[in-house]
Image 1 (spheres, rainbow, N blue to C red):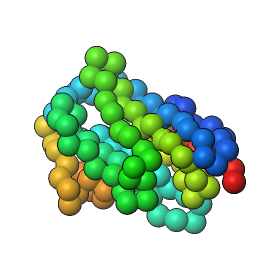
Image 2: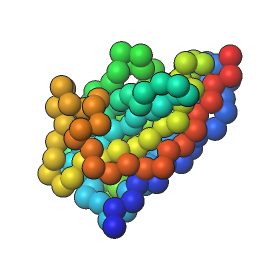
Image 3: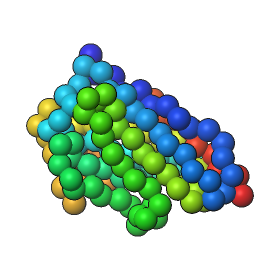
Image 4: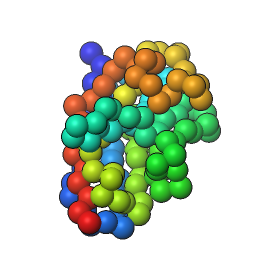
Length: 129
């Protein structure tokens, strides 16, 4: 069965950097859309970044654009989120998500939960101001 397992979350100081990983098993390493979402206490889950694996197109929320970078290593079948200049408002549980085989995201869908069928358990990121 498909498994998405996130890791890398921890407590960091404001202005610091952190990289998250999401290892996918029993899952295609290309021709899918994978993304990162986050949920802060008392808030709805929101899309942070996404990409169609095997393509160069990436999407970012306005709140992280220029500070976060999403990437995918097909050989390791691992999705990454590299986060820089972290702010206290980045504090949240971060989730990895993936679509069914040969299902792609678009600019209008990537940040919604609709395209994604698989979710990880999440990894906590806490940014201390």
